[in-house]
Each structure stands twice: as C-alpha cells, then as structure tokens.
Length: 82
Image 1 (spheres, one colour):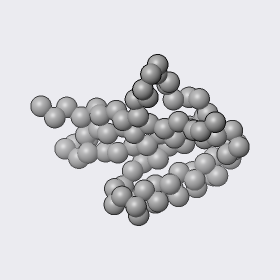
Image 2 (cartoon, one colour):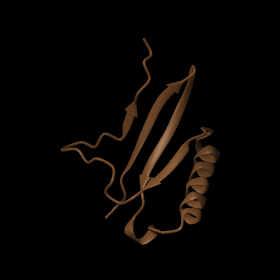
Image 3 (tube, one colour):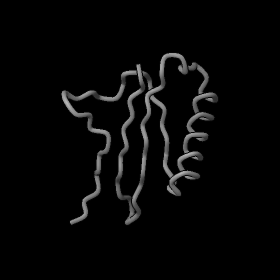
Image 4 (cartoon, one colour):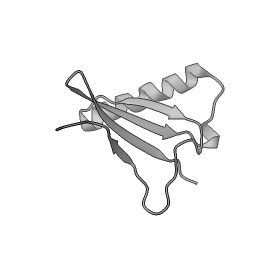
C-alpha cells in the first residue's frame, strides 16, 4: 500500500504558500511528536533542495486524506487570482 498525499497552494498577504500533506505509512507511524517533526523538516528540506520551493510539510495519520472516486485530486489551489 502506498501513502497518499495532497498539495495545497494558497495565497496569504500576496504571497503564495505551498503545503504538502503526506500520510504516514503504518510502518512509519510514531507516537513521538519529535520523530514526526524531524521527518517533516527532512522532507521540507529535500523539497527545497530539489525544487527550490519552500514547502510546509505535514505528516498525517494513514488514510486521513480524503479519497475520491476515479482520478485522485492531488493539488488543491485555493488562490483567488481574479
């Protein structure tokens, strides 16, 4: 089973924000907030290094991101560009 993820793009005070929600796999679940925070920082750093984009990464419980019928909705753009 692969983990699910979702990218949320928004605009706050005329600045675009980029959040990544990623489900932890059951093997990576941890009761330690420190462990989860460390993993989030590592993923955020890896995204910055690869893409040059600062992203806020939030690791969430398995199966907590909404599933959709058919094609998965991976990117949600909340910006009001008009």
